Length: 346
Image (tube, rainbow, N blue to C red):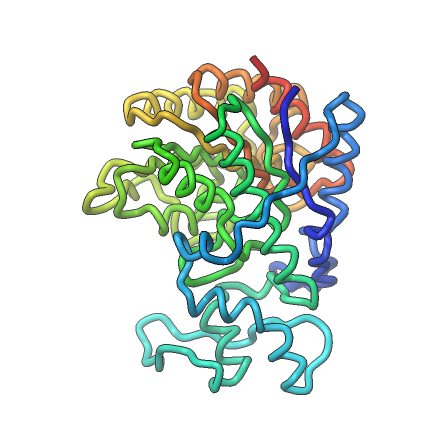
């Protein structure tokens, strides 16, 4: 039986509305995503979830700047103290190549700090955001603990997701980079090399940034072509790492409409690169927004394809932690996740 981790406290973040491609719409990343996954796993006979262990804030600093963590902890209180209600969202950002005063301090306007730390206008901060993001990170860290303690496979139902969050920024519905935190924890537990394989529809720009100059963590991502899809400004095939991390990043962007045949070809390439890297533990950033019916994505994977994906990932024969990322066709997200996990089972 696959152990999995989840806390109801991760439901605390309910952003309400977001600005998405010029329209104000209900947040696609909503608490109900976790409810449908939980229900699907129970229907499939999975045991009840384990509660995440509280590792405190210190492990967050392995992948995130201290000032950024402090900002997230007080951002909504500072928003309310400024006289505002509703969701905290930035409305202005430092211009690329322009003058920008740094660093941010608590004395800077909350609007300046939101624009400094956030890179989009679709990731609202509300009263429960810190609590949900904190426990999402603890869920990933607990999954890494299970692998370090001898489990061959575990699932961290992380919500909010994490792969768009960088060392000092958030966005793309992500606040802490759960997969990166788990990989770093596995490194500290004794794995000389760890691989993060990102199968979300969107490129994990935050994960790439965190490990860009490190050779001990391989980052491989299959995602939508950034010329057409979020996050637009990175995830191109020629981005392969720098310094000690040169060659330890692999980006495999695919065009809209890609089905399992095209996807599987890229997956085999990523699996081969993972073997060549020599990783002894695997973290899977699992997004099931590659499903054909996802409302904000454009691939064409079918429900049965997710079981095949799990089987191919299992072929690496590595201790594996699956960390939940995206997937926004809420009523169908659970069965797609369950299929991946069933495919991964020995």
